[in-house]
Length: 222
Image 1 (cartoon, rainbow, N blue to C red):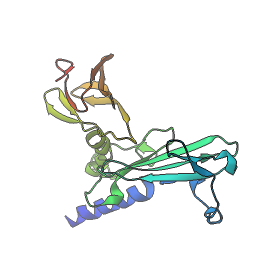
Image 2: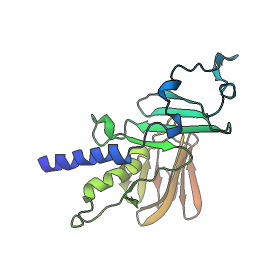
Image 3: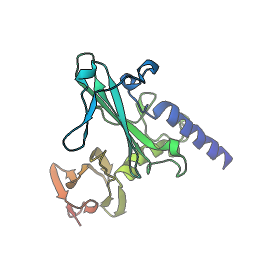
Image 4: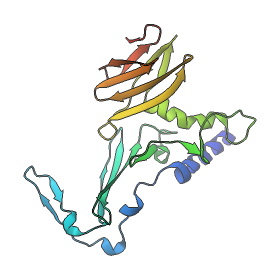
């Protein structure tokens, strides 16, 4: 048990130091000389806060922090040297953790126009035989299970039946998982506020339910 605990602690440390994305973009880190700079902000007609970035020049930035049970976010925004909008959304999912009381092990990703690729030393993380000591098989699957079981809520509940329970939020309102191989089949899953789509054999099956059970034998949602 002690050896297993040490292995997991090393895994958590590796996750925090190497795989956990930085919460702020490089261009959004404020310099000490800029902390007292006044920004051109005022209230709009609907009591919204308006920041006239153009009036403050170029290469200025700020951020918004929000916390919740399902997702927490740090939104960095500003403009570049030519006045174009820059934005990066750092999302952390508190319910997707290696251990319930270890907040540093929560799954997080920076959305700046890219997708979440989970890799180790440039290679997509997948299971290795125990004899290959690149990393242990059971622990290597934790990263994949965060996505399949945690974010998408996938669970095989019978012969060719799959329960889908996606964890959507205001900060992550649509998710897609492609080329899923299960039940000797290959399919895609998409979920958003309008429901769930299963794309199988070139056909899209849709349900408006936020969570559902899909039967691959009948090719329909139950």
